[in-house]
Image 1: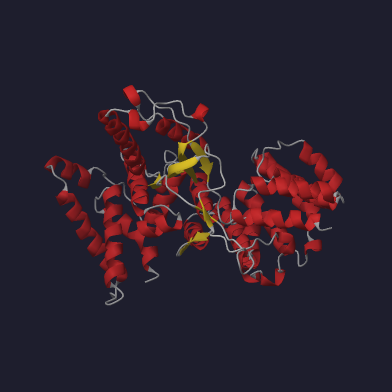
Image 2 (image 1 turned 90 degrees about the horizontal axis):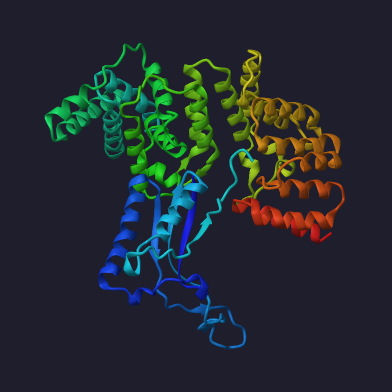
Length: 135
Length: 376
């Protein structure tokens, strides 16, 4: 078994965000989208592959240690087009192929006009803490 | 409380012999186990097994009664006309095979084995594998649904069972449950019940690896490689037990993967100092292993052994014949370059290998190796 993180982004470079933004959907379309996401998570709970799912607020702060009396908080050194993580789902699956298939399915959540939004998701394997016992 | 887990597969077997189906019997014993954990610390029964059978049977009847339709009830309770069995040891061995059924995914087989054979609770298994309890519960009940309707009389082969036990062993430990120790316990029970050289081979392999556990990590969890381990920390009793077991298995001349891996582990364990390691013989065992299984990982390890036996140039020549996409490929190349004095190349390769490591302890180790090369 291997754990994978599926990362959703609020904001990416425009060429990767080719669907109508959610705030321009009809209420029914929003409902359908949310229903799809919930059903997806329920199905993974049913198959015993679900680990965790969380959403993040788009509001955030960049913080670092500072030496010369400046406040250690800024809006961030990053440009306007920076990635903004919207949330994640963690899955525990038998293979990389299974993880790919699930990420593809999640990316097909319906948007405007009920069409799959085909948003880009980032799929990242978890790193184990210890090597296998036989190392 | 410790002996209770040994009783779990025996009690499941008893319920089955009384006509219970496996899935419900297993749930009922799990219910009884949880009740035992709750009540025994205050009031431990004199006859643990009798208590478990009584309570599990009651839980079984409760579950059957709770089924809505009468038809389902009768079907569930008596669907399985069990063939005559002799002893409870047979029941236990049957359970090992059932839980390692080839139709189950590896993760399901592992989870079911730990619950039905190992007597762990769903919560303990979930904690050990760092997933929510509900997820683990689903995995187990799906596994049991997969098994319903399958023939339950020792499906699959011994290798299926051994593969599951080895997966558990390799998980090591996180949380309360020491999975490596649990895998050893389960393999010991199996080895006591069936006579098979590969079962002995796997148990020997586990014991010899386990013997080095204290030496494998620094106090703060850093990885210590075989070469750098303090060999006085190795558990010589476990090593001796493993070697005796391995020799008896090898004498039967029915070689298998686990016996060969155990032989390689034994040769490492046998060397008082790293420079005493019999590398030529290790290379020969890797040749045997590659005859038995076409494993690219075994081929990579063989290249390491050749590097030690015949020098880094020979090792690098072996390595070039392998796919550089293999896990640890660059770590092996870095080590061989270092040995041939190419420190700059080694530093770069260690850094590259660190970027590809799939666990934290290994990555940190490789980063330290790169730093050590750069500091030369």
